Image (cartoon, rainbow, N blue to C red; front, side, top):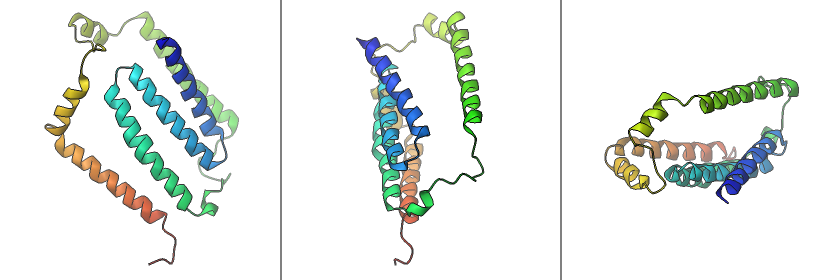
Length: 177
């Protein structure tokens, strides 16, 4: 059952990402971005990264995506029209060539790792430091986040607040006080 759910999340992620980059309608692309981020959080759960999955949902799905939706809804529609004369406009065959080359590199790396186990994985197995599903990693991350990494945590929160204020300023209509 776990394998079926994992491949379901992977198929939803890949399918939604392909639809996301191929759509011309920006609002539908934003909703597909929501699906991609949510299914990536499900994949994080299968990688035993529960804290990263919760953070993915809270920060990206709950914050950044809602901010993008508000920016889209409050923005000027003429600015969002697709322009074919942009600097980074690639024909479809070039984009497919770049994507296929990235896929080839990823497949090569997966084959190399499956043939020969990397030294750091073997050392982790020998030292018995592999994370098990029963380990409580959220407690350790919470303690470190609120003690050792408190200042970087606060800097990131101020940075996100500045991004929110900047997005609100950019979506403001001209002529308003």
